[in-house]
Length: 180
Image (tube, rainbow, N blue to C red; front, top):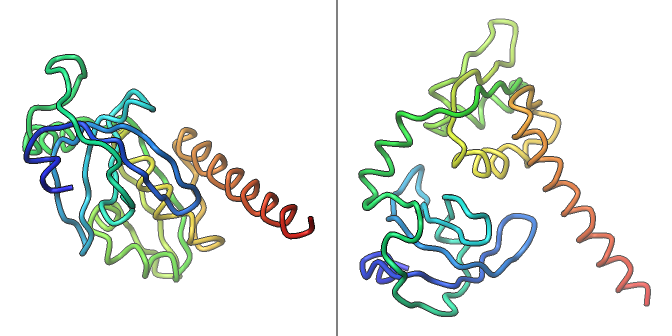
C-alpha cells in the first residue's frame, strides 16, 4: 500500500471490514497511524466520497494505475486532509456508555477527547465529528453491544443499523448453505 500512496496511484482493492468484504477502487491521500493501527484516507469511487480504510483490512491490491488529476475532489496531501479533518465537523455525536464502554473508549484518542465520565458510573461521548469518521466510529462502537448506546447523529445510527442488517444477512446465508 505504501508504494501506491507514494506513487499517487489509484488502487482496486479487496477490503475486508468487520462484517463484509468488498472490491472497490480508491485513490489514497496518504497514511497515518493511530493507536497502533495504520489508516489510509482515500477517495472511494464506489461511495463517491472520502473514506478512511484500515490498512490491515486491505487483503489484496488487485490493480494499481495512475488516476486522472483533477477528476476527483481529494486533498493533495495527507497534511491537507488532516488539517481539513480537524476543522470541519459535520455531526454532533452523543454516545452513552457503561463502565465497560468507558474503559474501552479511554484508550482511543479520538473518542477520549469527547468523553465525560460520571461519578455514579458510565459516561458519555459528546463531541463534533466529520463525515469521514462516521464509518470508523460505527466499526469501533458496534462490538461494544449493550455497553454503548448511540444517541446522535441519526446518520451514525442508520449506518450501524445497516451494518447489523448486513451481518444478519451474512449469517442467515451461512445457515441456509449449511442446511442444504
